[in-house]
View 1 (cartoon, rainbow, N blue to C red):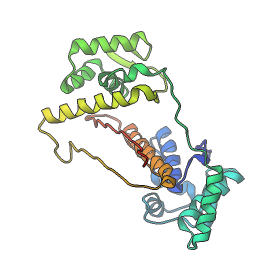
View 2: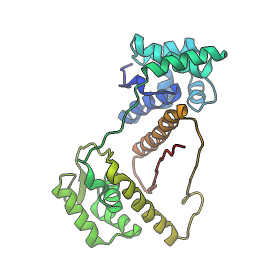
View 3: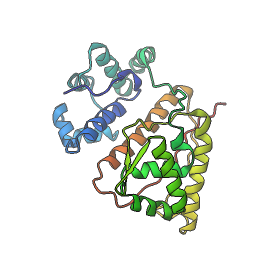
View 4: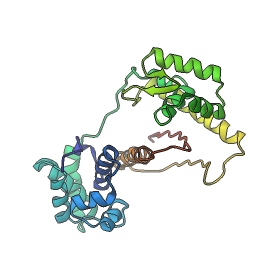
Length: 270
């Protein structure tokens, strides 16, 4: 198997590592199923599914064979095996030894400010138009969906022209075409205000359409108490959740409905 994970040392949970490896492979090949992945790893599909859902654990022996198949080098293999040992070792001293090893080599992604994607988060409507265009390139249908959310056609045209002028989007023959650009935004100065505005748009829409109604309109909010040493694992799981939503959406051939998510992850230290 061709190696897909660029930074093995950016993971603190071997299940998330496996999940994201599968996400990468299945996103680039829509015919690549969990059964295909299990076959390539030398596991049954049922066993792999239970591992990824946290129902069962890998053994150290199985882990070595699997990570070799994923193309890991000797150092990466040792790191990944320690991820498994940290979860599965029966003796506390073995789990602590694995944790110490992982701590020495862990190299999680560090967020950096960047200002080149500011137009996407100029307003909630900019984000919505851009996001919808990635799945629905028909201009009339895009504008119709935005109108349902409360944006006028005049304002939609103005936003579209901003995107075209800044080379984010192209408009041709009644279609809105997304240019091949990295749409990840990490501008610390703008993201908080944008999140607040985006959440207000979603709340106004839900309120105007009868309020929260399971399962089509649901609001989730959590306040969790965790230790500092577990924060990175929580953050990693949170990022993986977003990637999983993207993978599922990417596999949808013909979108006939949209899920709007406002997701703010905040760490408050004592």
